[in-house]
Length: 108
Image (cartoon, rainbow, N blue to C red; front, side, top):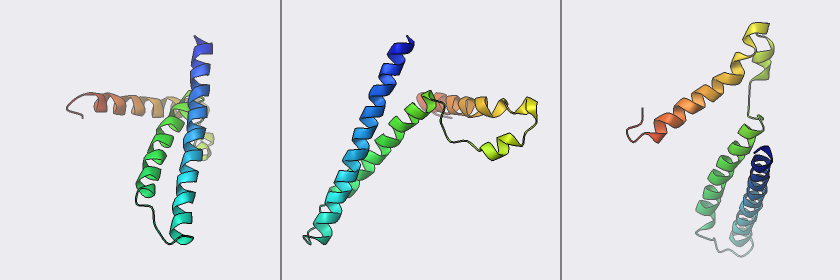
C-alpha cells in the first residue's frame, strides 16, 4: 500500500510541476503579447489564476503527505517538551474539521 501511495504522490508531483510550467508559459505569453505585440490576450489572466488555484490544491496534497506544510517552528521550539507534540496534530484536527464542515450540504 505504501508503494501505491508513493507512486500516486510522485504522479501528483509531476502533474504539479507541469501545472507550474504551464502557468509560467501562459503568463510569459501574456506579457509578450501585451508589451511586444501591443495586443493583450484576453484569456491568459483568468487561465493563470485557475492554474494557480489547482497548483495550490495539488501542492497542498503533496506537502501534507510529506509532512512539509508551513509551520511556525520558532514558536514550537520555545514550547515545553510536553507541548511540542501538540502543534503537529492541531493543524490536522482543524483541517479535518474544516473538511467535515465543507462536506456537509449545510456547512458549519
